[in-house]
Structure formats: C-alpha cells, structure tokens
Image (tube, rainbow over all chains, first blue to last red):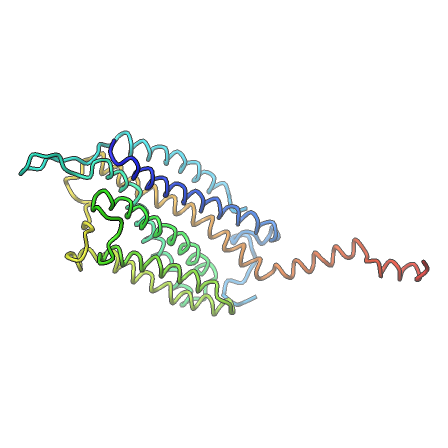
Length: 55
Length: 261
C-alpha cells in the first residue's frame, strides 16, 4: 500500500474529530438535561411558545 | 440526555456502516492505477485515492448542512420559528466541522498528488476556506448578546450568505476552471470502476446519515439550551426557595425559638 502516512492522517483526523464532536454534543446534552425539568426537555413534549421572543 | 430509541437504532446502524465503509475503502477496492498510453508508465493516485472516501463526503455534508441552515434561516425570517432557528444553528455547527474536515483531508490528499498542501491562488481552495470562515462568523453571531428574536434574525441573514457561498464553492471549478488544480465533477465519469463508484456513493450516503444522526442530537442540545436560558433562572430560584423551606436559616431558627440562647 502506498501513501500510508497520508491515509492515516486523513482518515485519522476524520474519525477523531467526528468522534470527539459527537461525544461533546452528547455530553453537553446530558449536562443540560440535568438542569431542565423533564417536561421541557424535548421539543415534541414541551408546551411552549413557538415564536421567537414569546415567553 | 439527547438520545432516544430512534437515535440509538440509527447510531448502532452507523457503527456497523462504518465497519463496512472501512472494508470497502481499504480492502474491497483497488488503488487508482492506469497505464499511460504514451510512456507506458503506471500512473494515477495509487492508494491516496482512498482519501476521497472521506474528503468528498465531508464536502457533501458541509453543503447539505449549510443548505439546511439556509432553509432554516428563511423560515426564521418568514415565520419567526424557534424550531427552525435551532435547526439552522445546529446544522451550521455540524457544517463547520464538516467544512474543516474537507479542508484538512483535501490538503492531506493534495500533498502527494499536487505536491503541495495548499495553494493560495486556487479558487476552489480559497472559496472553501471563505465558506469555513463565514460559518465560524455565523456561529459567532449566534452567540452575540441581545434578545432571542434579534439574535435569530441577525444569524438568519448571515445564514443566507452561507448558501450563496456554497453555490460559489461548488461551481468554482466550472466557472474558473483555469484558476484551480481541483478536478471537475467525476461522479458520472464512466472511467470510475463499479466497486469504486459504489464505495464512493456509499461513503456519501454514510456521511449524510451521520449528519442526520448528529443533527438530531445537536437539535436536542439546542432545545435544552433554549429551555435552560428561558426557564433556568426561574427553576433555580424555585429550587432555592424549596431548599430554604426544607432547611430554615439560622436567623429563622432563632426567631422561632424566641431569641433565647
């Protein structure tokens, strides 16, 4: 196989960055979910105003 | 918690799909080699072509993500929709990551093929860099202080600029063909062999499926952020009051005992 170093660098960066980003999103979600009441955690089950700025 | 039954099934399928992509990209497909008719030498990208199975999907995901951001931005401007505002922001964040990966993998591929990581006078490279920087600007605008409506409208306007730039990036190799080393679209090229073409298309499908999975999670994070922003303070105060009721302060205890100590 040729260009092994380039393949490791290219594929490695994609796998590492995608994995790190995915994990960071999930961790952010878990931390925020602890601070938000259960009935407001999901868009589909939240009785909320749908227009921006309406509270 | 942003997971659900749907995302867990999709996530598990993506893990299996990633294994298949590795197999197709590194085992099943052949390196790119051809015989030069004039010299008889073996030419081509050799194994560096396997970088295309991550580079092109990254670019397609970035385009898709910014397109969704643009649609969300239009909906925000037309309907002042919270849902679309969160979708637009979530999609832009994923698009920024994908644009960064496009630049990184493109540069790594370019070194053995073009003998350089980067060319400042290459129109495809530069327009992609501008797209990446514009997406960073969009994310920065979303974090500016102000009312929720003002912030959403400002970011929606910037979000529309993203799709204009996507069109420029995509068409740049056709409009300014002499100003770039980047090849034109070759998906429909009959010279691509069947399994290579299948792997290429599968990698794009996999990338878009991964984008959908990430978008669902990122949307839910955006929704939680909004809920926390709107109600977090109220909830924190209510929790503090409840805590105070359960555990009276020293002053209150002294008052209730008549001040004798």
